[in-house]
Length: 81
Image 1 (cartoon, rainbow, N blue to C red):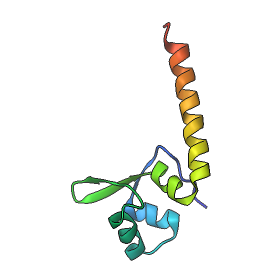
Image 2 (image 1 turned 90 degrees about the horizontal axis):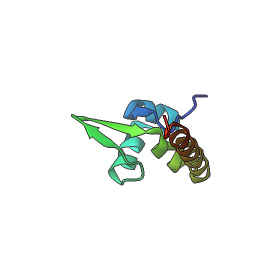
Image 3 (image 1 turned 120 degrees about the horizontal axis):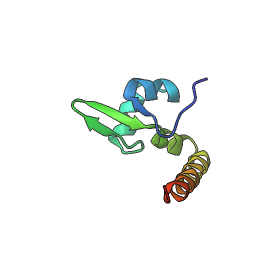
């Protein structure tokens, strides 16, 4: 089973495979705004964070909190360089 990385950028095809949904379901999710995506040219790109948010808000919140904690710590350590 593939791991969804919060800061990774996925194509609609990759997201579809990760979520194990059909292409029509993926289009519906995007159209109704259940998954937020950015349109680059004629294609959509989806952050892993959005996929995690849809699948499990609790896991997404844990991942976001951990990322923010590491980010704050890094800024604190490198501030005096």
